[in-house]
Length: 245
Figure 1 (cartoon, helix red, strand yellow):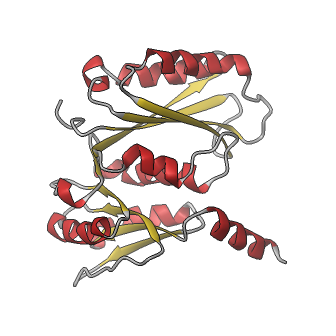
Figure 2 (cartoon, rainbow, N blue to C red):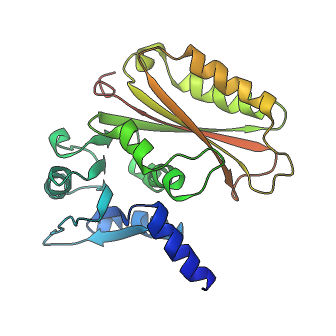
Figure 3 (tube, rainbow, N blue to C red):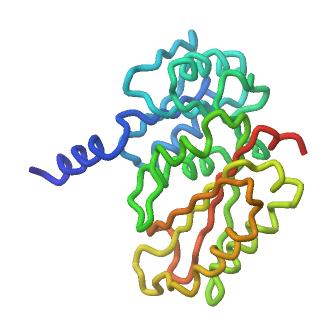
């Protein structure tokens, strides 16, 4: 069996057969191209043009719908997927919340490629402590609103620095509206400066400080794009009142 066949087989065994990113109209072309450049297996990223028809299949598990304009068309497509039981996420303004499981808040269209990657990377890549599609579903299903924040720490104290930056972005008012949170840690794939157990104290302290009402999960991944002395922390946080700030 070739390497390519092994990759395809593993992909089909370990992941849902369809994670989809749908861009509404030509205005999303650059975003969709950036997603495709990630080269994620089992992810289909396409631009949808008029007449804006797209039908969910039995294999679909996750759809991320991206729009710069054309919210009515995006909402209509989202409703079809949501009604079919697909985890439906929206990256757009003027979304009809009833058509989605959750809609991104506190972000601009310029950030959309990085934010789509932040959603897909942990459920596509293999981690040391992994986070799969079902974890993402648990975090975001039926939550109305979600946000994504990332920070990078460098050198000595890199974990504490990254986690500290995330904590600074989560005001007490914001924390009181978060219902679920996923914390994803990335470090250099080269392992010249491996993640040390003592560095994890910053994470465990952060988890202890979260309100008891928040359901939290975390995962750790090697990442070839992370420098040897860096650690990147990304959070995906969700809650029905998250947009009311």
